[in-house]
Length: 328
Image 1 (tube, rainbow, N blue to C red):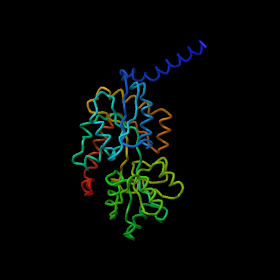
Image 2 (cartoon, rainbow, N blue to C red):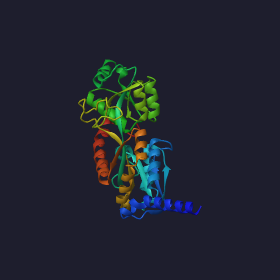
Image 3 (tube, helix red, strand yellow):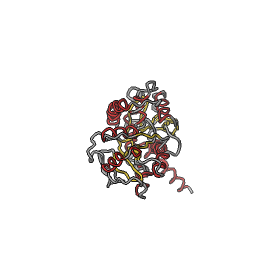
Image 4 (cartoon, helix red, strand yellow):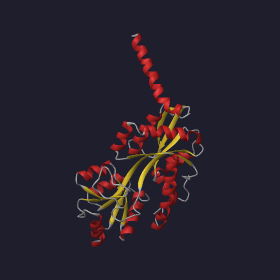
């Protein structure tokens, strides 16, 4: 019994060293008490699940305990504003997709935060590819054939997206302009309803994230992905060309996800970035991201900040030219 107790005590001590070793190596003393990661989506969503895995990895190296706080609604803006107004002691982090940071400022004049002034970029975590998808009733098997099909009948010239004012919405508008098509946008309240109507032949096409659900339905032959809006083909759909390959140089977009802190939390940026990027190398984190068809990107703070700025500037003219307003 004594040997067993000593063994358990020794194991606990070793585990503690493993948990805090990275923080100490970075010259960082882990925070006492509780830290929180604010997520703008409900429990059980993909972003929430990834955030909880990150919280698990941060508990010990970063803070004594790290929890996830869900602040769903308004496309992630509620969560962003809550994080912006938090104390800059490093105990509040924001895990957010790109859209609330790069599109919302162009859509909401009275937005309660400035992505570049109010937040400190920490680490880029993952990215989801976007693409153009058609249902099995559409005869087109290539992007060119789809364009010709749309031109043949105005009733076919529409596309669904997960919601008005989202990245897929404006990507669809960008494609329509580049292809010379007058596509009608149909905004849904989420990807799930849009995908269900696509499969049910209520809408002919869909522009959205190529998540696990889209990949699965594509493999079953119920829908077809015609093009991917990325610089490289998707590992899940290697047979599908990119828009770039098909002659659309402006059709590059991805819904990246990153961790941010309030702008005044500069003291934690470097060690937190190091801890997060090491956590992304863990097999269980990689497996989780793959399950949701997310690509691990592990952008350091500087790269995430540069990407935020470049995307914010790039999408401004597209949003303005679309004529879309938040109250449309």
